[in-house]
Image 1: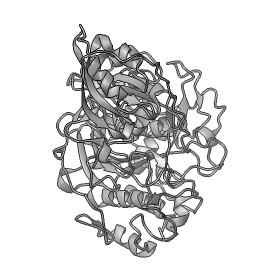
Image 2: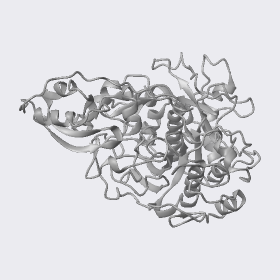
Image 3: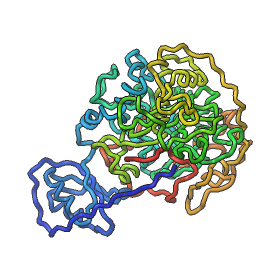
Image 4: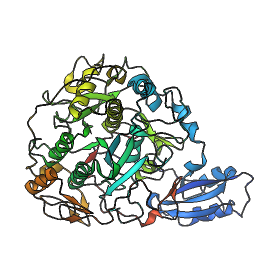
Length: 547
């Protein structure tokens, strides 16, 4: 479901020119967004109020600055100033988390009251030793995702790979998903229990995130990039010390090609057969399409629908979220997970962060609705089960989650909407591992790339990507590619199926020399980052809204 952006523009009040004034409060870092036509009036106002401009932030139409804390309101009233936000890095990290912990969408509530994740933690299973690949818009190392070794960076397959945003989340979606799956605050105690509401802790707090970036600042990507990313996961799942056991895909397309032919479906099946539990968002079209998105429509993988908490921490009044895709009676969502008002980590200054300021909670957190969030919850749940049972196969993980899920009281047994129901790790923890082996017909991958894209296409350098060519304009032969994926020969260095991705490198667990400080880059300006187009691509990010 394409997210409709509605940015509120706040007109600043005109004020007379002011002489330089020394503020009486301590200086704080701020991010200032400007209205169109503001000129240099906001910058001059900062100097006049006793502050200084640090750097321009072109991506948000503003700049970062330092300013006496008692002068923030004065700056907000200057003509041409849209907003003034304190730097996240200068706030107490635990305050936002503790203040919202009791809310139904908090990870604290989701872990303790909804999914039973804290029961797994208390039994000693926290996802340790399990790597979760996240194919998304990248990850930034905010508190919760910045401890040594927490995030490993695979290839960046976007147009941002050769610039300062390489690997990093200029969109905001990927960081949000990674936080749900495996976030853990720096201050969180080594022993993770369900009792500490002052720290942000994700579903599998000791799992490691392997980030493969396929979407740029505005969420743009092509199916060929998503396929290349899955291909990379299959080929590198145990390379360089990795142990990728879960793959989170919080996106999908509206393509209706049979999963038996679809290249994207074939790619996720290959990951599944190689021991990777693939978790996919069901989609955010409600009952409009009568089917799951692609590749959630593939019956092998775990398709996750959205649970609506109805604003309460109890599950007794829960319903299937109105935006969550229904199945067609044959292929339905497998399970549900929390999908409304889910609170996770914020990527300050990113596209979503600046477009949806109402979704912010304090300086660190961000709230979103969608089957994206539900899929991330289940990816974390899968990592917990794998840490408990290292030898478990993907078919068994799926059977364990579906077999212990709890039907919603208000769903009236509608399997087309809820599948088996809401996941319940408290029950799954003590349930014997099933011996299930799925026997669906296997995909061939010999369909078309164009049909996999669905209805919307990305534009690169003024060229609309259509037909049997990838995002780099190279011919895509599904048969040759499918054979290469099976043989694990498509990736060679920085080349995928003969296509070179500029700026791609294996960065291990290092930050590649680029550091993140609050809401600004250290020595790197966003103004040099560009993207080619404004439309969402055939891969739609499954978040219904950010509010």
